[in-house]
Length: 318
Image (cartoon, rainbow, N blue to C red):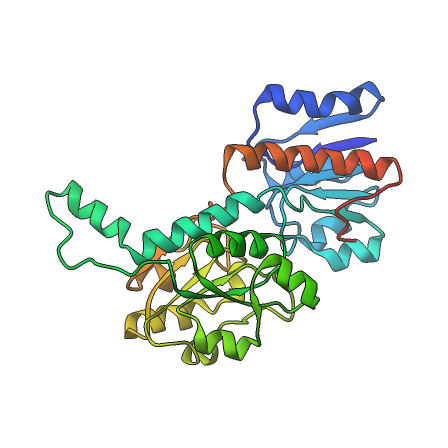
């Protein structure tokens, strides 16, 4: 089989060779394309590929439709909304993701972003570098706050564990059902979205992007939040209406926000509303980005291929 890696996964050449060697030993071929490959080059290599490995590069339906030999896509990412899954279903292409590779990284980043936003780390660091002081930039503690977690899957659950260590009251809402035993094990109070919005001092998003979560937090939902609350999004960009969030920050409805994901992958257009909003920390999608995560996602992506070839598909999306 021909295996094509469409974009670098951030690993060393030695690490990639180690992952690929078992496939070469079994007679399969492997091609790794670089970050700057043109769409023509991508299609030339995709069209006769049996297996594709992709990170967060968009794979549109019209591109997939030209790949008549394609049988399996291994997504080296947790989210898969950048791949046309319906087109894959139409063509009978199996798809797996790298579920779990960045759970700890995103959970740690969430807590870091909460504290740095609420305690004004960015602004005070800028003042310190310019010879200023902390004057007036005082913020609240995380400890003891009521924190609403939207999405209580693997990442949301890891965040809840850390929040409990800070002595927070944790409210949880998940579009997918959780048993009372699961809720107790994870450590949160299961509530409706409306109650979570109304009672939380801080809200953090960790749900997937799908038809039920797209636009989940808009102007209506923000209006139901506490005055002076904080909102953090390390899930997927379109879960939150960016313009509505910017308006709430600029009006003072919300005290602050931390955002790592957007409608498009950074770099963002310079007129993006959150780049000009008050009291928001904007990050270029780095919540998952750790040395350990880069290694783990590549390991999972190639393990997915191995398991699929053996007829035991894991981390199944399709």
